[in-house]
Each structure stands twice: as C-alpha cells, then as structure tokens.
Length: 331
Image (cartoon, rainbow, N blue to C red; front, side, top):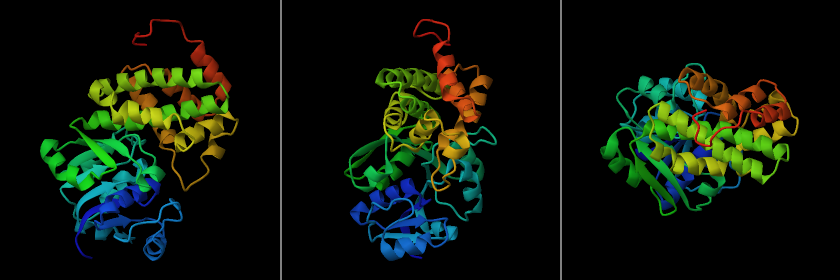
C-alpha cells in the first residue's frame, strides 16, 4: 500500500463525504469500510451505493476493508459511530500523530466524551475534533461549508492539519477547546430529536424556534459545566450545528423525532440499522451526566423519557407546564 497523506476510518455517508472533499484536489485518500464487499464496490464503481449513492467519487479515493492499511496514513479522520470508536481504535495497529474525531456523541457505557475514549486508546496521539453544520450530501457535492477544528495539540497541530483539511469550499476555523466542540456535537443531536417531535406533532415554527433557543441554553450550561468555553458553543460546532440539524428532514435525528411525534414507537423508528441517530444513544447518558453535574436540562430529560416510551404529547405538555421564570434563570 503506497503512503497516503490522509485516511478516513468509516465509509458511512459522512466518512464518504469527507473522503470526497479531501480528494477534490486530486489528493490520494484511503477510506476504510467495515461492511463486507463495500470497499471493493467503491473501488470498482467509484460510488458508495449503500450510504451515499448520489456522489460520484474521485478516482484518487481508494477503499480498503483492512484496518491495518490505515497505518500508512499521515493523519486519520475517525468517522465511526460514536459507540464503536473505542473498539475500532483498539483494533488498529500503529497510529499517526494526528487523529481527528468526526463522530458526535457520548460513550453510553461510560459517560466519556469521544476525546477521552481516544486518549485512552491512543495516548501518544494528538487528538483533534472536527465538528460543525454539515450535511454529508452537500459536502460531497462540493457546496460551501465551514467547521470548527478543535486541536488538543494546540497551534502546532492546527498548523499540520489545517492545510490537510482545508479546501476552497471547506473552511475550518481553529479552536483549542476540544471539550466545547464535542459537547456541541453531542447535545445538538438530542435537541434535533426534540425539534423533529415538534414537526411530527405539527406544533408550528414558533414552537421549534423556542425549542432551539431554550435547547441552546441547555447546551451552553452543560458545556461550561464540563469545562468547555461559551465562545466555542456560540460558534459553528455549537449554535451553527444546532440550527442546521434542528431545521431539516435531512438530519437523521430530526427524522427520528418526527417519526416519534407522528406516533411511531422508538423501537420502530430505530429499526433501520444502516443509519445511526446518535441522539438516541446520547440522550440517556446526557441526562445522567447533567444530573451528576447539577445542570438543568429539561428538554434533554423529555427526549430521554420519549425514547423510553412516554407519549410525545405528554412530554410536550410537561415541558409547557413547567413553572414560569426569568429567561436567564439557571433552571
């Protein structure tokens, strides 16, 4: 295997879109696919018919089903589902200095953020987080997008990664706040489920706007409690990603909430194994962590109850019946 400048671990829709974006200038990109036969299909047809059929992939993308091949890369973008990140890292051999986490969530079994999972599995690597308002099909199509690239290795890591990641239509912005970047990506998935419920119940645009605003307050409180910066959450990886994910049926989490609002059970709505609505995994552990840190997150609690089987109308009624208070009140 010839040396590739950058590798993408995970050939779902987002991983494939990132590979396509990185290869847009002719750079060689190595893409790892878990599913049997998917790597061969991508190499043969230059298309990921399973996860991103709309994109004709660049010829400089090479897919592989062997994790060991990824050791040839100078940097890795990890785009596996959040709940499998630790297992995938544990199976990898030698790792490059720079690992960029592109999965959004919290490890359900431990309550750890993704950078904490990665640090344990790869203690000698510099961990960065790439997060922001991005839909895979738009990035793959070359439409403009901007993201936060939070570098745990500081400015030195940024100077290595920015030229590798930036493209004319893909603009990263520097941050050193890995925690804040991860909190934004994790919490917005849960809030997107809530906004989907509003859509499914046909509660109107006023209700969705209010929910986004109050949900952002929850995100901000939780992020700061964990050590993140308010300025990070006010940026692309927080407010920006929240607005996008809570406003479009293209969001898997929004689609899940809409189905729940329309009366589908959580079990039925989550039955599609090809796509992952990370908010469903994140909501229970997020509610638990919020209680542990003394952070009030009533919308998150409501989503957790909804996923546990409580009817959507009852969850909404409970939120609307909360005591009246000043807008800036901590509860």
